[in-house]
Length: 340
Image: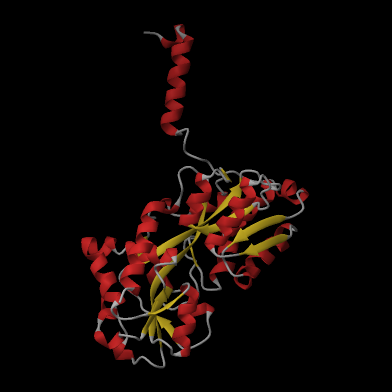
């Protein structure tokens, strides 16, 4: 059959060929006009990173583009709660929202984000990218064992999570309360990746060690530095972000929670929001945030933490329980850690 005699068949074939090379659901990087962003006057960002840690990044963006950044910080849960409440009220105040994968997925499900692929993220590994382009990964939070370097002798440093079950650590560990802290509940649940069906046995054994439970991951580091606990489970980045006698254990695998940025689907300043995300994912922006101890996705950029380049290849991204699974986990962990 001669396709040129039947234009409709020729056109259908051409479209099919284009789709085979460039799938319609594969998002492409979108460049932003800085001048259009400047005309919007500012950018409003809701994020989970402490303001002092975001200062270099935000000032770098302001210096480069002349666009002021209004930054509001809260926990991932508080960022999602505020963004969702404003969205449902029809008055979204943010242009960019940042948080961990769990809350980012909740916001995405509610339709808060618009599609955007920052050109600077093209250098990130494909493993990190979201196919629907509704949120952009920009940093990761590997978890390990931190310990007090003055109170724990070098030969006694735990090398694995299993070592924490040694009787000598009973009453000397710290961790967030997994019955109320979602990331810790998620972390323990993801031990299935290493322990299979026996992950819950590990959790029960860990509870018998009577750990000093705190409200979130950051206070674990303070407890260790003060000597109220000798070791604990928390983010590696705190080794850089807290002053005191604290170091981390380099393990074979580190469960890791990625954090994402998304542009509001109803942003008052969409160009400024997209430009901000592109800058946060650029080599310049990633260097700024890494300097404060954050692990980032841009190739070859690491925080000033000894062995950081060895952590990155051994990160294992955590899966997210469903809402119902989270509720059951919280209830189970309450029973395991507090039943007497």
